[in-house]
Image 1 (cartoon, rainbow, N blue to C red):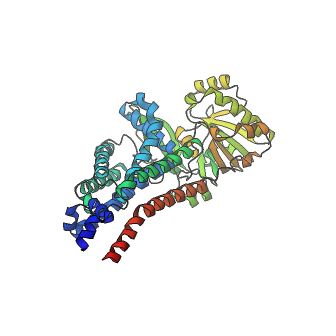
Image 2 (image 1 turned 135 degrees about the vertical axis):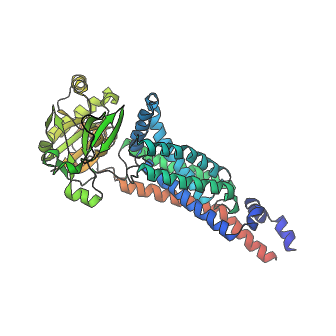
Length: 442
């Protein structure tokens, strides 16, 4: 009688279709290992995709660095799309691996992904063409050899799942796995959009809000810097003890402050801030300003001319509120002169190291407000409402009061988790009721 009920019960049929017959013969050790591999490999993919989504500008810069090193700078126009896509792909693959969704296809896709990344990181480890792969953004910087070792482990894990992932059932049923995929795509894209057009909702870089800017002129010693040299179009960082000899092929490019290892140290001791005006260090003058508005322009050749009008309005608005305004760029002297002519800028435009500008704030241009040398807020120019600038009533110190990045991120994550839980409940509730009915009939 029980056998007949099971054959006629669609709930039982669905469960049996989802679990391969071979899984019943698999040992519990295999099932535990499959579950462990899902957690480890899927968790790394989720984490990697999440930190990339947090800081799409960082991924964009890193992809440009890869293309320049490989001589593929003609593809630089695709790097913004690539930054968004890479974060979303890694996050979606990770969630699908964690939940066991699409059990046959997803491990194969993850294995193919690792078959591309593992040789790439081996090449980086051997040549050191790029200082770090950027796998975990600025949150966790690993050496190239450590990255290669990590990828070897992930590749082995994905191959194991390709072979045995079908032995363990999926958390979600086949009917709703497309919803899992969609929700897991929307989250990183949403986070990336906010990070790209305003600022990353979590700041993993040295110049966090609350950081004290320290003048380059009063920096303690060269031990607090790394020195950037270039050879054959490739840049590399050296400590003071390992800088190349003068007769080597390496050419000095710039130096930059070493990021403190902990956020508390960064806020307490400050970060060196080096700015030059025709070769003269003016950073001391800037960090002692009572109120300072920095207009950061890392890629001056890519700034839309229309943006110059908003910058000029922003400068006039800041002056009316008693705030000093300074532009900072890594452009050449010729580019600075051209900018001043075209933009009709009435604010000084100084020079700084390209990497420092990009670390301080994301965006092109980006705006940073500091009071008594302490960073209070930062955001991209495009995220500022022109009407607020035109009205001129809001104090400069409150221009970022509408952002609340950590609160928005928490809301996004909680909404995503609640949606995933709702899908799971709807998907699995009918199985629970189906089992209760079977017990009553039996």
